[in-house]
Image (cartoon, rainbow, N blue to C red; front, side, top):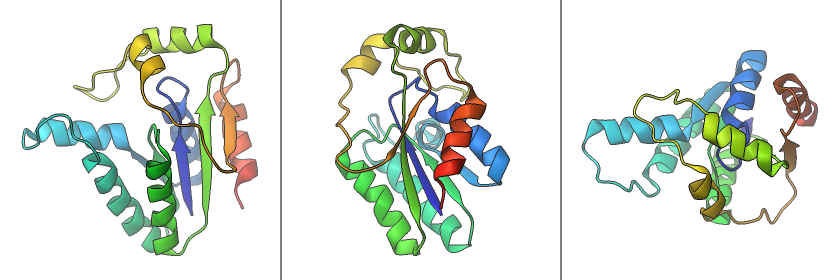
Length: 165
């Protein structure tokens, strides 16, 4: 199956995705990692646009066709990006779960944004202004919402596991 995990930066996407991958043995695809590798190649001018997502879609579909579960983690900010992930699952003929991480406590979200450390060499993390002003469309369909504010990674992962078919 394809687990589509989106949400603003510093809401806990990567932390939850990694925990879920460890628990399930799923493949974790992180668009930030893919995009940084593309930038590091020196072959593509910034900004990358949809290139990182296109690579992630192709990798996810290949893994899904091999019978693997994939956790696709990205900000996934627009309806068009969400539709594209869903299309990957449909092409591969697998079920999917859409989930959004949120941090409902603005002070906690800001603290996380301002205290994060870079775990992908060369990746520039957005500051609080960039997080709060970036384009991010509200979700227009049913999906699992994981509020990570003041909750453990284990609790959030359990919520995701409980939602899986």
